[in-house]
Length: 489
Image (cartoon, rainbow, N blue to C red; front, side):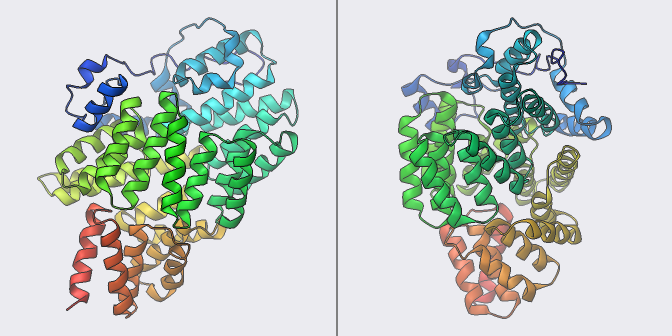
């Protein structure tokens, strides 16, 4: 089996998976790079050309995964048996932050062929698989990660690397109670474990325990200040409506970033923060900073396409989002591309949009097959573009697990599309209760309030949504303007 975790050597799965990189001089000529990126590249001398795949390839990969199992997905993409020289650096978790994850995995696999009882390297391999699944949108890596991490703990029970890895894996699979349990176990072994400190913040946030998450962020900042902690600290403040502090913390984090990966990560987070406030020029500049450091960085590519759409550059937005889903067919960008097609309304766009929504269903099925709880993804996508009854079932199931602003909003909207607006009202109020500035949440609340007969509140929240972020969604913003106009008659 691919990614075997027996005492024999782990298989080398990564051959042929890396993207071909070419000089930045060629990248600057590409139409996918706007003037902001070119300017930042000239200053920073950073940049690489990224290569896109055909959208049809996404469907093929997902179809193979669903018919042939999760291992088939990985094998199809990473086939090959290239040998890699063993390296002592393979055991170092720092290798995973070196900017070449695939090379790092190869090196660890090669090291474990010669040292199969190295529990630390098994833990690092497991964490690398978790990261690979996250960055490549490939949930088939999660079972492999679980096997490697369990092997680490079998060789050395309760080692903090293995426990921290299981915390990260549980969070990636949306098992946030499990993530919190493993993070707490790790911190008993090593109170200064950065990964566990961050996983604990993430778990508390995703469980809706925001006050505890704030305290956990303060503790992590005391013990292990740095970019991973700073970005989480900023998000905790953003959830409470404190955008100014969130941006100040992220700017501080960016000032300390030195590697391309860290720069891209923090700059993209700044772009997302600006986007949420409807500040598209700042968002595009931040995304340019991210893409100058790493021009294949998914969150920046996706965010830039959304900001371009909101700024009125629909052609660039469609092209950019097509490139994103060609390589990373994840629910968020798939839905965004489908809505861009619907909004454009050209010949064949309705069918193109339907294809994107079908791929969302395929990804969700693949994720579930690999142990990921995908109920929130289901609820959010299906409410507007799928089976409304399934959306409500999924939203109820997710709400039973955790009470967050996101699950409250998803449940409220699922209830609305199923004609249960009075039931939806307390949930949509809860979604906006923390001060989190999210135009989609305000739009949903406004529509639900109008449906329950509260025209004054409904108009107020629709106007607030459009004032905050007038291009928050190609379809949602259009519907918000239409509903506001009708409610104002």
